[in-house]
Amino acid sequence: MHAKTISIVILTFITLALSSQTTLAQNGPIRKLYRKYKHQENATAVLIPGIIVHTGLGIANGFLDAETKENGGQEALGIAWGIKKVRILSIEGDNPIPQKELNKTFKKLRRKGHEDLLFVRNKGSRISVMVRDKGKKLRSVLILISEDNNFTLIHAKTRISKKHLWQLVHSLLKNEGKDITL
Image 1 (tube, helix red, strand yellow):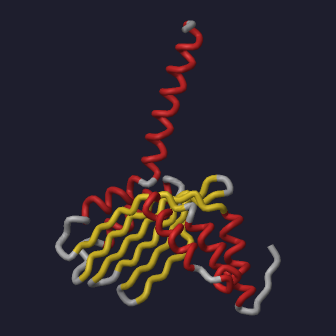
Image 2: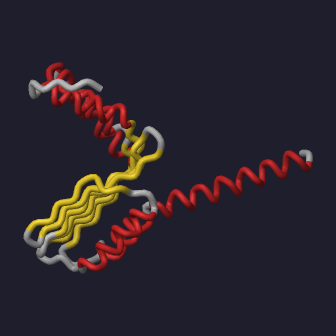
Image 3: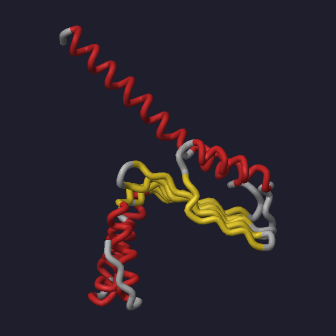
């Protein structure tokens, strides 16, 4: 190999290594919270790789009838194919996570590109939905439900096209008798 080719290969490897580290860092606060509390008493922690999700989707596709596919089922399956990994943490009977720690986690997520999609607070309950997008795709979806005696975290690492998401919304609204133009 020539010296120029070797330097290009090395530069490519360095760029790939650095880009993978920054990608991991964007969901770091979620992973940190998950790892810290997954061994708590009454905690159920599940990490579902994309290959398992896709296998289940392939099976589900075979069971969908024509009416369900027509009424938004096909769009929902298309969106679900964009899921790369799902992380679920559920703690029942006690919520060991202080509100201060949750606020700190949300602040870090916002700094790393997540945006609030939905936030509801009612009598000791807190429901938050946050997303991170890149271009025309959703890259991360976080659903967090915190109550006095329960805690649930669902995080999906995704590559969901916003276009497919709007097609699903349109299809569901159309089935309800409401039509919108995209």
